Image (tube, rainbow, N blue to C red; front, side, top):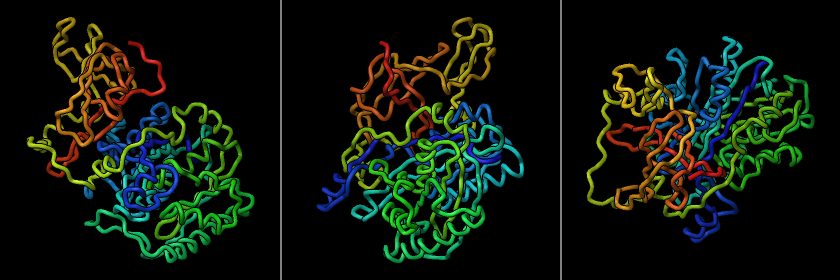
Length: 474
């Protein structure tokens, strides 16, 4: 039996009301909200944070391959999957691949991963994420959200959803596209997109059903992920499927999250399904991919073990904040020197520390340090250190400062001294919160973020976010 061993979802903390967008343009933005990536988040950071939530499973089922799927990868020529592998402490012989150029990148990566599982009998980790820009006042602006989903694929008795069948229909069409020098997605007229997409979906669904000798009425859940929420719902209705079977497609909180949109709806469905139920995922994009899954008895255990609910709503922001975070509004940052271009030799030298979050631990007395040290201040031994990862360790704020003068896309800047489990202490930037959201003793968790861009290089590092819904001790 091969299929899904586990899944996790990462949705950014912030939301913007669609009404807020519509009001700015003196129009109707729609009901609900959409997820907004913070200024220090991109598709890679969200993909890492989604995968980090699978850490318990990854330690048990170490993947032999890691696939990253996105239409908004941080680099046009550099593998994001390699950076991900380093943050997740995967071996250097892990096969790394990036998938892109279409919303169907998610299903492409899924089917390639399942082929790898079948051929090599080893787990495969998929992370799918997007942070897409829409031109202000464009009809899709109010629904283009942000988020990431990670799937761990494998085989054996621990599979929670078995792959029953899959199929592909390739269709050459100009419906949704973006050139290398385009900042925003381009779309053809809605009726044409609906026509070509519906045709591909019907053909693909027919192929999957014929392979399994089943009918659409026998399928428990149907998911259609197209170029927009409106298109996806219209195709689902055209399939003449009962509404309760595509309830996961109804969303007024997250929006359309690009490559991760289909996997997100699969995750929502899995979180509410029972054993022995079937899920048909139809992913549109220059044709259609069809994937039929069947849940196993293990789905209940995974639902109980998951760390967080799927797509929980959070703090609202203004439209002006949204424009600044997405670089759609240029403002004067003050008379301050620009950020220096990161040094490639320095990044390479500190890659384990900066991406893997490795510090050092004294082998004589057990005292730990971050950043790495050669001399132990506790027992004074020199060069008696071993690597020590801070990932997953309990942490809380020892003291902090709020800086209203430092240049920031999202002021004020908050920096804190963090006390770590094991005795180490480090300085970290606090994100996804305001000054009133933290205090001394607040428990925090590490979150992979982007410090800044300079010279065409993305400088990634770890920040901390407050653990919400946790009783903090001063």
